Length: 167
Image (tube, helix red, strand yellow):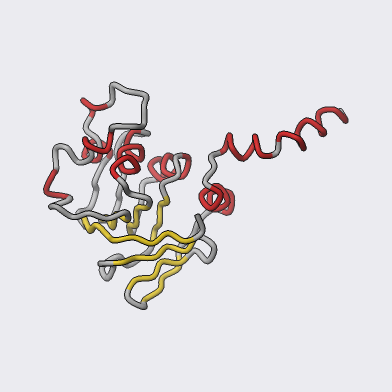
């Protein structure tokens, strides 16, 4: 996935933590499927009937506990990316490992309607306005190729086996 286009769902509240994203009572599973219905279960006003595949959030998104269920719930609900002026480090790491694109840009105030995220150029575009964002090259590679760290290693299985055979 090099280019992600979708409708923005705007929730510009700051400090949305992982317990607001997916309340603790829904953490009894290790399955990723089915968590989307519990997304923002205690804060239904966040979505207010909005639908889309790109969440535009307030600063410090994903703070709180290191809850992998948070990106799982966002993905299961239909989100493919989160854009914020700041994203908590642990949430960012969990998002990338699960295929949710975390985008950090300084100004999210103009992001409404249709948004395009280009992972090749690391840019976000909305209504003709373009902003750049930083993304670790390995994370970028994994997101573009829709693989996780294990998928990356498995893709090099032949090379790894040849290396081990030479040792």
